[in-house]
Length: 423
Ligand code: AMP
Ligand code: GLY
Image 1 (cartoon, rainbow, N blue to C red):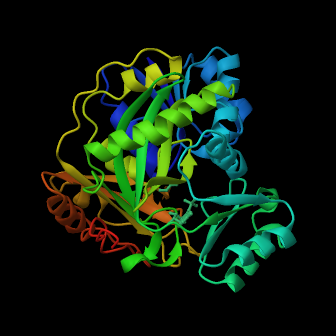
Image 2 (cartoon, rainbow, N blue to C red; image 1 turned 30 degrees about the vertical axis):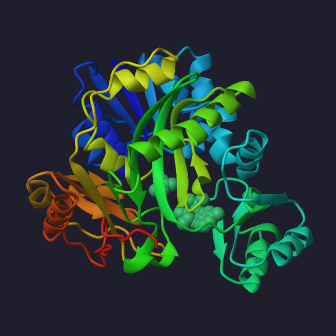
C-alpha cells in the first residue's frame, strides 16, 4: 500500500513511525513532514492547507490511504475531496468534523441527543453573552465557535474576565470570524482525560485514554499551550469508566452524527471532565491529540494500518490485541518564550544520544534542517516519549533522555505524569 500522512508535527511523526513498521505499507509519504519524519517517509513540500495539491498528489501517486493529522484540513473538507477523487482517507468529512470546527454545532448536537456536557448557551450578540455571564456567575468559560488554534476556550475566574473574554472574541475579533459566535459554558471541575475511539461510520471502537498537561509551567500554572506533555494509561480511567464513556458519550455521539446525516469516520477525541456527577464532555476534537498521540503510538499493540483502513473504508473492525499494561510518557521540549513569541533557527544538540536511551523515542515537532544541522522551527520543538513497565519507569526514562538534549532557551515541564487526581 501507498500511504500519505498529512501534517508535520510530533503527532504526525509518531503516526509515521508507527505506520513505517507495518508490513502492509510499501511507500510512505508525509506532507509536509519534518526532519524526524524524513527518516521513515518521503517528505513532499505540500502545506496542510493546500487541499488541491494534496488531492492531486494522492491521485497522481495512487495513494491508497491518506491519514490526516491536524483538524484544519479535516474541517476544510480534505477527506470529502479525496473521496470524490476515489481515494480512501482516515478522518471525518467536513460535516462530521464540525464537531470540532464549530462549538455551537457540537454543543447543539449534545443537547439534542442528551449527551452529558457542561450547561451552556450560544450567542451572536456580546451584550446578551455578558448578561448571561452575569446571570450565571463566575467561574465560567467563554469559547469562540470556530477553530482558534487551541486558544479559543477562555476560562474566566471573575465576571470582569468574562466581560473581557467576550470582548476579545466578539468585538476585538482576536480569533477572526471564529469568534463571531460564542458558547458560554458552565465551569466543570474534576480530572481531565482525553479519550480516543475510532469510528467506521457505524460502530465505535474504543482505543485508550491519555492525560494532557496544557499549561506551560509545572503545577498546572501559566498560560495554556498546545500541550506540554501527556501520559497513558490514566489510572482514574479504568475499564468501568471506559464502558460508561462508550455507553453514555461516544456511542450516542456517533449515533447522533449518523442520524443527522454526518456519519463519522476517523478518530473521535473526547475531552472529558470526570466530575462528581460522572464524565462530561468539555470538547470534541476530530483527530488525535498532540501530544496524546505520541503517548498512544508507543503503547499501540500491533499494526495500526488495518484499523485505520477499516475506519476509512467503513469496514468491520479487525481485532486489536489488548493494550499492553506498559505506561508511556511524552514530554514536550519548547522554545524559550513559548507559548508567546519565540526565536527559531537555534541549533539542537543531543537528539541521537537521547534516542539511544532504552524505551525512548524522540519525535520531532518543530524542527528544520539548516545547512545540514538540526535547528528549532516551532514552539514545541521535540516530543521525548518513553515507554516502560510502570508510569514511574517511563517518567524516569523520558527525563533521563531529556538530559542529553540542548538548545538555547529550551524549557519543559518537570512534572509530566505526576499530576495528582483532583480532589
Ligand atoms: P479547549 O481549547 O476546549 O481544549 O479547552 C482548553 C482547556 O480549557 C481545557 O483543557 C480545560 O482545561 C479548560 N476547559 C474547557 N472547557 C471547560 C469547562 N467547561 N470547564 C472547565 N474547564 C474547561
Ligand atoms: N492535546 C490537545 C490537543 O491536541 O488538542
